[in-house]
Image (cartoon, rainbow, N blue to C red):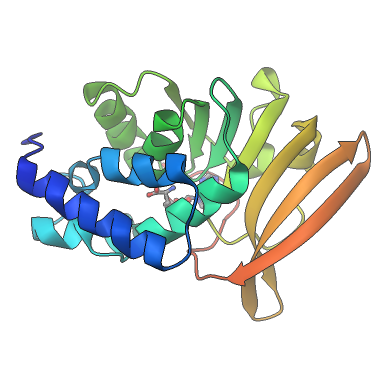
Length: 220
Ligand code: SAH
């Protein structure tokens, strides 16, 4: 795979930053991360695309029926997470690795789970090659989380969540926050849940989004 990041790519990313800012993202660290991460390198070997498409504010298929999230959505979730350097963040749905790379660029220690074995293998390799050493990839069912490494300061789910992810809430540190696209009737609403105490949570509701579903079990 060619892993070249040219001035043209950088220019396209600057334009993407401006676009996303125009849609309401104001966190400068998040905007800087969007401008830094070479999204065109996250489309996978067998994905046919034109490089300029990588910097359109759109989701894109990446194989195994999955997608690389829209940059605006990645920025939106990252902004809601209010990432601080060195925080431990659990991501459910590694997919292309793009969201994980953005969180790593924000200084987080990222633990990311993917249920599709092929995607997991491909993305783990890619993130290592690209030097994202503060992202650790795991093959598994995100509903289970990673109890061994809990508690996490933040948790982000990048697939539409059909039910309250109880095990994940348990793995969140007190004072920690979880950003999830939650299915409410026919809609998928972005929620931010704050763990106020051992069994105490508060929930804020944000905008409506569209995500691939969060599914149970692993795919070999
Ligand atoms: N964060 C990704 C978005 C990928 S789309 C990116 O930046 O590209 C959502 C991903 O969630 C898909 O790869 C899908 O396979 C994965 N997924 C869905 N349900 C899951 C589960 N229960 N556990 C782990 N991953 C899951």
